[in-house]
Length: 139
Image 1 (cartoon, rainbow, N blue to C red):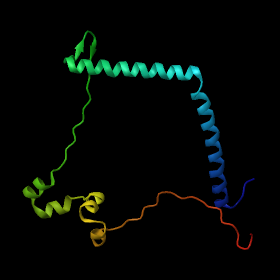
Image 2 (cartoon, helix red, strand yellow; image 1 turned 180 degrees about the horizontal axis):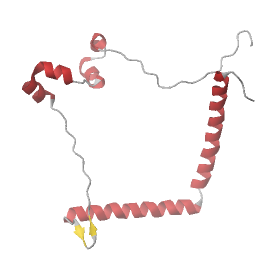
Image 3 (tube, rainbow, N blue to C red; image 1 turned 45 degrees about the vertical axis):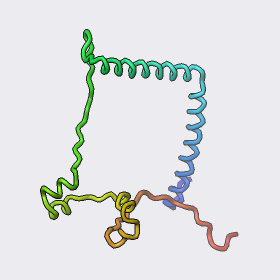
Image 4 (tube, one colour; image 1 turned 90 degrees about the vertical axis):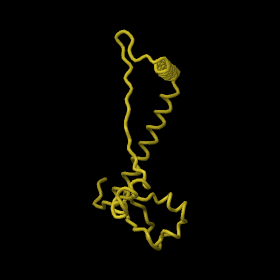
């Protein structure tokens, strides 16, 4: 049943994919409700909670190494520009060149209408779908 109509094929493929997703969800639910699976998930949760508690206790006690085991804490630095300080040090031209204004914060402060002539709008395609359109006169 291969049609030359690409849009019809795309539409039907989406319907088939949705049906497969429903089948998969039903199987996943059956699997998740099995007593042995539930018990294994509980065991995993207990182990993860024990791990979290042990790490928290080690940190609180200042333990970073015990025997052959070392506590390794991963960190990440995140720098944030303080707008007022940046402006004071580098001036208006650099500030305007680098600044990004969060639209939500600006709207909350000034109101949506106040931004209408200050914004550029870009339209980005998020995806495409095919819809069935009933032929005219077939009711």
